[in-house]
Length: 348
Image (cartoon, rainbow, N blue to C red):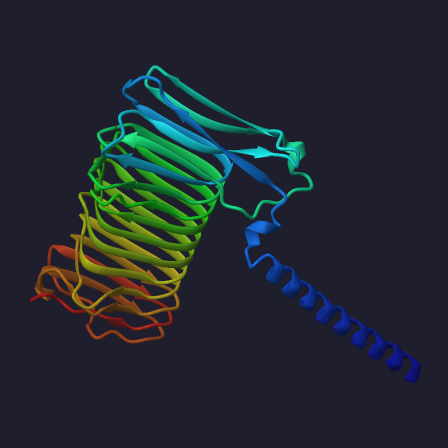
């Protein structure tokens, strides 16, 4: 028995020594690299440029890339489209990936084509940039899809597009040009891990914000319908106006409304989190359904109108509600929580 304990102590001490040595090597290595994790990448890039040789109107822009930050810039001084893009190279500066740029019949496409075998023993911690600069008055459909990286739309003037589809597996999606973004049809922003930010977006169709891990923020947004879906993180709506249905679903996190949030119907559902209309905010809908399993439903601001305008269906199984169910108003509000409290306030 004593011999077994001795060997256990030896292995524990040996493990601690290895751990300390590993930490020391890590600190030394990162200090040499100035704590720039990008220097650990085994993938290298060289930047190339491409300019359309005509001023042909662009009706659609498609981007397909593996790992990159993609920025679409609407510039007042641009006469035609210009693209700055990275190409993967090996240690001898030979290109090991192909980037195909096509411009025909109003369609501009940028696609990175990789040889999968080149990635077997490589890892990429850098952030190469794809920058597409367009004339400010370009109104083209956007279809951007990357594996890892951010997608950003920028412009000082108002930006217009028939439709917008932005996707990344891991990274931030930001559709917030300073002059606003007007989309004739649908706008869809999807990421698996990261942040979704839509600001100043006006869509004639449906806005879809879909995320798994991170945050969703929609401010100064109007649309025919809006859907925000998140698994882990917080959702914030501020100054949102929807003609039809506004649906917000979350698994683990909070749902917050600020400013004026108005829709024909409003649904908010979270498993582990709170639903709140923050101080100064007003939530306005003919039909409201609020549900939280393990969290409070709180109106610190106000529900539009007066209590007499509503018929209330309130359930707080293991909590309390400051108001009873009942009423005969045309507006219908259903609020339910398993382990939380319900607190409602009205404008009048």
